[in-house]
Amino acid sequence: MGILRRAGRGLGFAALGLGFAATTAAAQVDLSEVGHLLGDPDAPVTVVEFSDFACSACAEFAGDSFGELRVRLIESGRVVWRQVPFALGFRRGEEATYAGECAADQGAFWPMHDALFADPERWKRARDLDGAFIEIARAIGLEVDRFTECIDDREPEGRIDAANRAARDLGIRATPAFYIAGRPALGALSVEHFVALVEAAETERGGG
Image (cartoon, rainbow, N blue to C red; front, side, top):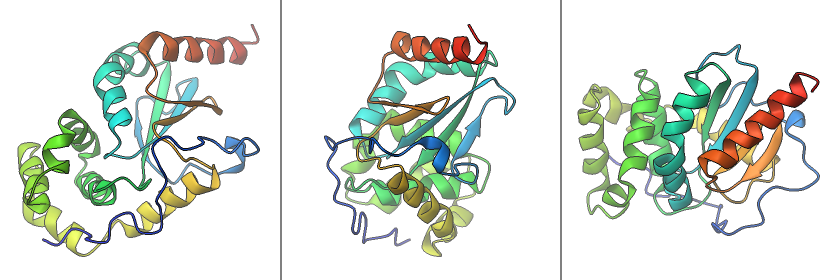
């Protein structure tokens, strides 16, 4: 399996970039065809997260906050979460994006999401990156031959291009980057900070 040896082409954004372009509003970019949903699509508040699987701050957020947010906000029906993985420019980030999308083709985006963020240094430092992804695919129950064929044939390329384009149109230059009910927030936010932002969105939506 030859997973995209030309990772991060044309993207060289740094993790400590300038964040969101101030003049770009979320409402101007159609996000309905990118990313992966978790939760009730009819939940009153929508959270969109842009992340790069090779971003250490994204892994920090996934490990420190997301699990509790999943229980408190998503499973409770308060929030529907749209995860948009894209290639910001981190080493091996583009390859991991393909791994995530090819897992999604087998209905396993979220297990792959969790596995990639659980121990990113293991695959980021692996001498055999293909083998590292295959090991993860096998561990989460994917059909490995189908997974490797998906990556070799670049089957998700259109979806990945669309996610990259959406991130570029929004001016996202650092990850994780969030839109909470359409309003931007940046960084590996704590649980309480994130919940406070959602509560503010709920209050606004309720006219309070």
